[in-house]
Length: 85
Image 1 (cartoon, rainbow, N blue to C red):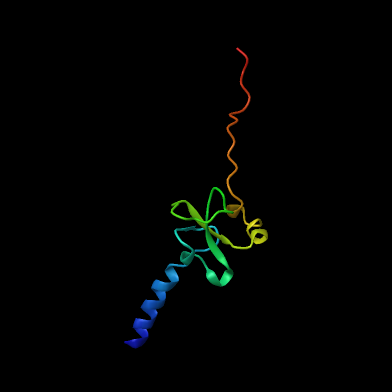
Image 2 (cartoon, helix red, strand yellow):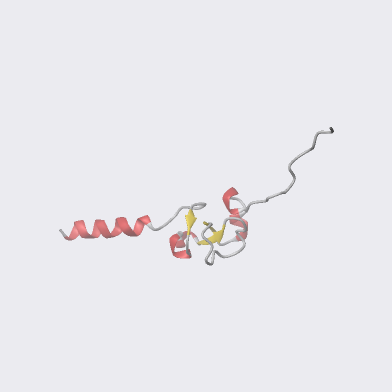
């Protein structure tokens, strides 16, 4: 019985740790052993705060630059060329 309780507890704990690039709400959701923190998906250089669109990224900027999800979104307003009428 004791072993079963330990396994159930560990399964709940393991479910809270997200992988790199996965969504998160706070730093505790990310893998602290790998020095990952919860960052804004649109600008991973900024901490998550109360934003709901956050992902787990390495705290080290050089390591984060190697992960496409942790580079950030570059949004442009250019809709492309227009046709002459």
